[in-house]
Amino acid sequence: MTAQKQAGTRVIPVILSGGSGTRLWPLSRSLYPKQLLPLAGAESMLVETARRVADKSLFAPPIIVCNDEHRFIVAEQLRQAGLPVDRIVLEPKGRNTAPAAAVAALLANATEPEALVMILPSDHVIADVAAFHQAVRTALGAVAGGRLVTFGITPTRPETGYGYIRRGAGLSDAKGCFALERFVEKPDLKTAEGWLAAGGYDWNSGMFLFPAKLFLDELAQHEPAMLAACRAAVAQIKPDLEFARLPPSFGDVKAAPIDTAVMERTRRAAVVPAAMGWSDVGSWHALWEIGAKDAAGNVLVGDVVALNARDSYIRTDEKRTVAAIGISNLVVVVTEDAVLVADRDQVQNVKDVVDRLKAQGRQLTETHTVVYRPWGSYATIDLGNRFQVKRITVKPGQKLSSQMHHHRAEHWVVVQGTARVTRGEESTLLHENQSIYIPLGTVHRLENPGKVPLHLIEVQSGAYLGEDDIVRFSDDYGRR
Image (cartoon, rainbow, N blue to C red; front, side, top):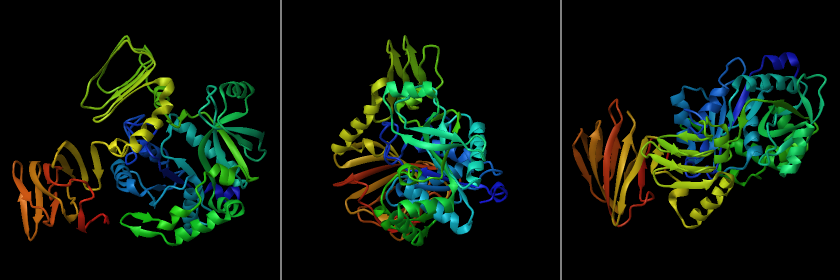
């Protein structure tokens, strides 16, 4: 691409929203991973990432690539934030960043032959957005020269938890850009200290900017089978409501990161070093590092009373008060159904706790007590032998699927708003303090016809109360 054409082309951000929800448990869960949480600000990290690329002079509306199970939460968060989206692509199974980037590049290239694509993880914090934008503008110089650019973060300490990039010589035709000499794995402390003293090493941010066609050409050279499989998958994409659904065959594509699939093998790699207040928020320790600290070095989130506490990260939900006395260097995280207490220097072992809970079949690793659905949410209030009590919230104008249950009956009590209940052939409007009984095996549907959220209490009774005891007959969200 010529510099003249490149200057008039907006960058298409591709926001990758995968994640398994292990490193920031108990707040992050597999069905509600960290990018969907407001961990470093008032908005979720996904929304903050999308807001970061909302400058219309530099960026086009983004392509979102996300897990199928997260689709409605992703769409709703972006809708509520008022942020435009080009499309939301659903992966049946995560295959790492190279296949996701290939799919996005193929889609972008199909509509804009000279498309520029920027790959962005959805779970990073960037404190200095102006510096981020300037780094992108700097990288455009290298892109105009036919290069694939990665962004190196100027290191502020001898970090052993990040991979590094070794810079080569500066590019004569792109000010502020350098040849990429090599990627290097996470070092030990002594090596990291040596690199910091020597200079020329940057943290690997996992962000990339390149012409879509150039990336596809390089992938064709280095991973032809991967590219062929991605082309076949893109050819079979099907619209599903507001989403673009990749076929199940995409789950068989070779999984690989962009680094190893292309960037370590191409001769066209460049790096733009930048200081932008970046963190990948890979642990509770990282959140302590970037958080606003009190005079004693504590980061306190929520209703926390700390006495003689130092250098700790303490976070609680809106329902609980935490009192911490005489502690130091700890992470304390309280949610409605779990409490984490860990030495701040050992929080990398949280993943081992999650693995153990998974092996025990515990739901604590998958969902919170509040479970979000496209129509609203529900929370389990009580659970016992042959009964379960839930609090259900339905958004205005939304409805649950038409369904029946083989093993349970349900009682509904409206506590706020108006409910339209279809039970068999009858339709009933229920108002505050009114109730209805849904016998076992009865086809039924719940709807909020009003303009305010509907809140009701559901009491289930029966031999089996699992969420998989649902037979759907029709559903506005395409669920089966």
